[in-house]
Image (cartoon, rainbow, N blue to C red; front, side, top):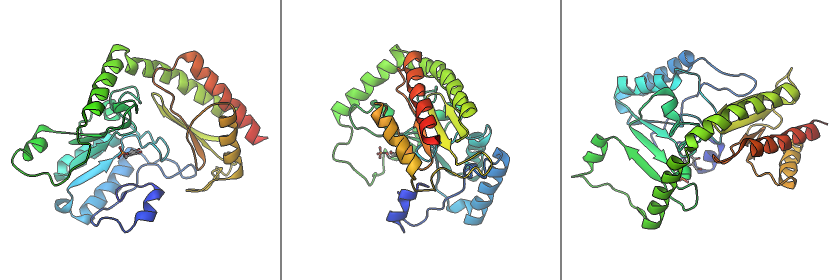
Length: 287
Ligand SMILES: Cc1ncc(COP(=O)(O)O)c(C=O)c1O
């Protein structure tokens, strides 16, 4: 909770000491995106001010999930890798949401050919049929614990049922080529999202990578004021949520945005059906 940039952190503060947050390249719908170079320069400045030798690890969601499917500009993730290597900092990729084909590659970092030092995994690891989280790491880090105690533990550490579920799930990802399907359907989804943006003035920005997508809503295109405040809701967003439910469409609606994160097995017909509901919902709340 201390690590996250999500506002749910506020309730748990002051949290653990020694955590410093840095800005990502996205500053919200009104201020938009920095280039990779600008964002990286700011992060390098923070590293220097904090003292690189005092920094054990740098945690990042390569494509930030719940906080808005933030697909970073090309060069950003590579730049974070380079900064970590330059200053001897371990790079930890949090792929709990973005892992296991969600973005059209096994892991989001694969889009930029980046290898982190540690990688966190959960949700897609078992397709959520059984709860399981995992941490992958470079051999040298694992070897450290050959003769040193890892001071931690879990009741259900490596639970056989969960591990068997993960193995079976991974087999399905491979046998059914779900990364391929995600890339194909992701291309269709990109077009459908662009269609929503072209048609509805309340759509401020759409972002997606594979089947990981978000639609951000604004009051109007001139002010680009979000349709709900940061960490808040609003009457139109609540109406949108209700419309989706009434139509039998279950998706995550948060602040001024809603997600398009369909199952990786989705067909084009099903995807178009879902977007038809999005389309009608946007017409309804704009009217
Ligand atoms: C990106 C990300 N990291 C970490 C977590 C926490 O994962 P877990 O619930 O497996 O501890 C979540 C949970 O929703 C998440 O979305």
